[in-house]
Length: 152
Image 1 (cartoon, rainbow, N blue to C red):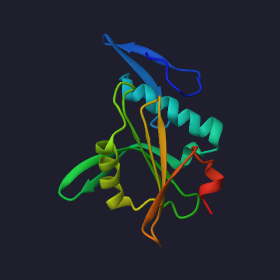
Image 2 (image 1 turned 60 degrees about the vertical axis):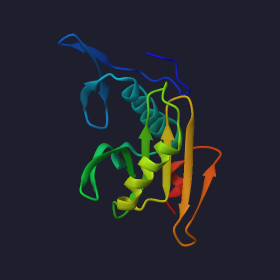
Image 3 (image 1 turned 45 degrees about the vertical axis):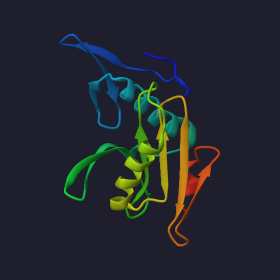
Image 4 (image 1 turned 30 degrees about the horizontal axis):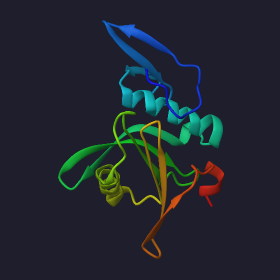
């Protein structure tokens, strides 16, 4: 797989019926190793191991309904108390540019979940946005925040 802008971790892969799979420790199973999945697994490990995000409060491939359409959020992070969604993360393969179309996609998910934090990553570039619903404004953050700093 391609080198990305995230710390390495102890990767578990296997070959199943001629296809490479990678272990998703949040779903506790092997999944198809695609470029997007490569980014997801590195990013989730980065959040848990370097930013203090509790793995028990994260879920991959979370199903939601946007209007009449079923969609899946790549990763959702939840609050410690009450279990409310706190953050949506959208992953793209490293060769996919992060464009307005990607932000439109994750924003449509947020019409359902109403989270204050959105992250988009292609493994090379990571963009985090904080939404203030009281002022209906947003700002881009310079870094991915620590978990404890976003659960006030």
